[in-house]
Image (cartoon, rainbow, N blue to C red; front, side, top):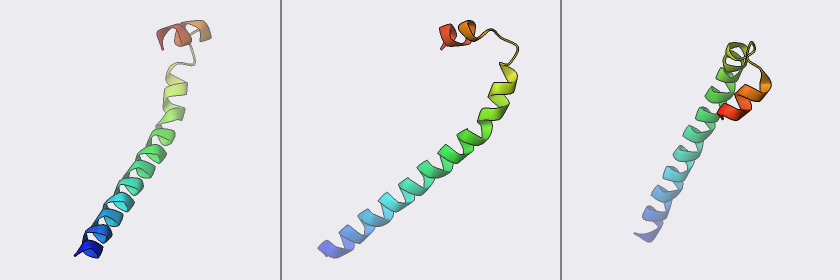
Length: 50
């Protein structure tokens, strides 16, 4: 019984890791669009807004 719970925990951790990695790749994919959108703004203004 303990091993079944441990196996489910490992599966849940693996699924969570996969989804987090997928999210990171998605955000990195959107980064060029963000950079293009703020390219016309002065750097100091972008940093001050963040």
